Each structure stands twice: as C-alpha cells, then as structure tokens.
Length: 304
Image (cartoon, rainbow, N blue to C red; front, side, top):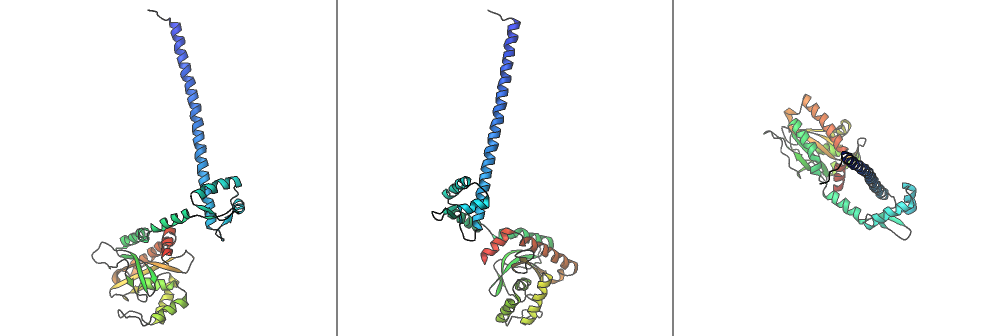
C-alpha cells in the first residue's frame, strides 16, 4: 500500500478548500445576479400593470368615450412604443377596443364583465351589516337602513337586539313617510318644492296615534327642522310607546341631498335625556361613515 506524505495531504486539503471557496464565490455572484433579475422582472411587471390601469382609468373618464393614441401619449406621458405594446395586450384580452383605423381606443367588453360581476356581488345588506349591528349592540335597540320609494319608506336592512323588549322591523317592509323618523329625514333630503308636492299629493294621511301629524304644512315644518339639525325624530307618531331617531346618509359630507338614511327604534321611555343625546351623536357618526363608504354608495345608486 502506498502512503502519502503529510505535505502532499496538506496540499490536497488546501486545494479542496480553495475549490470550495471558488464555488462559494461563484454561487454568491450567481445568487446576486438572479435576485437582481427577479427584482427587475417584478418591478417591470408591476410597472406595466400600473400603466395599463392608468390607461383604463383615463379611457373610463373620457368625455367622448374614446381617445386617440396621440391623446393617450400626451396624457400619460408614456412613449408611443410602450403605449402600443400595452394597448395590444389590453385589446387582445378585450379590455380595450380599437374604434377605427385612426387608432382611437375605448373600453372593451371585459371591463363591462368586471363591472357586472362587481355589482352582482355588491350586497347592500352585507356592506351595511357592520354599521347596523354596531348601533344595535351599543344601545340595545333596533337599527334600520331605509330609502324613499314612491310613496313609502322601504327597509333595506334591519338589526334587532337580543333583548326581549325590542321593536320588530322586517327587511323589505314599507313604512309611511309622514310619521316615521326615516320618512321625515328622507323627505328632508329632497328639494323643499318637491317634498311639499309629494306631501300634498299623498294627503290625506292616516292618523295612526293621537300624536301623528297629518297636515302637510305641519309635516313640512317638522321636515325643515330635521334638515337643519341633521336628524329626525318620531315619538309615538307611528306606534304608541315607540320612538325613532334617524340620520341621513349623504351623497357627501357637504351635500344637503340624500336618498338613504339610518335609524334607531326603541321604547319611548329609553330614548330620552342623556341616552337620546348619545344615540343622536352615534347616529350622526355612523351615517357620516356610511356616507364615505364608496361601496355602499355604489350599491345604493344601483337601486335608483
């Protein structure tokens, strides 16, 4: 058997370590290059997606419904070569469509499909549930969301508390305008002339309790007060022993028009003094939050 001297063994071991270090250096270089390549690729695709969405947003806001390649170039500041590549991909997937040979583009059918799918899944009840359940849970009373339809108030969603003594309201039911908190605040969202006309055309009104207002002038005066203070109250006008407070869901925080409102309904003896003030404050905060909820506003607009 042939034995290697210690010197030869040391040389071979050193050579192995040198090779390992060389492999490690090559691997580190390769890893850095691959990481940079992935980052560049990810950045490129993210940028391309962002630019494509920018084109779609601009086309959706076009006053003519379509825009030329030159106008897209001026507006987006993207090179025409980049625009053409993006438009080609969008056109292939039906997100844009070329209108004519003059290189005019408009939104395509895929955008319509997305919008229809979005609205189909947009549930007013699902979106409004957190708001109503929060109010109902905080005060132990029934919370409602309603809109004005023809000559009635239609309840779109309701949340009742778990307590035994509670006001029962059903989703989809209809309430009169003149003697409910929702009805009064919803009428306050109309132009005064339109509200007066609706009241006069609907007269005479049913006097459901001794406190029910039935004269159009009296109801209109109450509606005017509701508009100024930002909420409406109906205490024992619809049902004896029951009080309701309602606040508007405005088109925006500065707008004095609205077509939906939120309310709390409960025993008249429990909606007084400090509790009443707390409910009014909470209703205003909740209705303001609902007014800023883009999904809820879109869903409500789809009903009109």
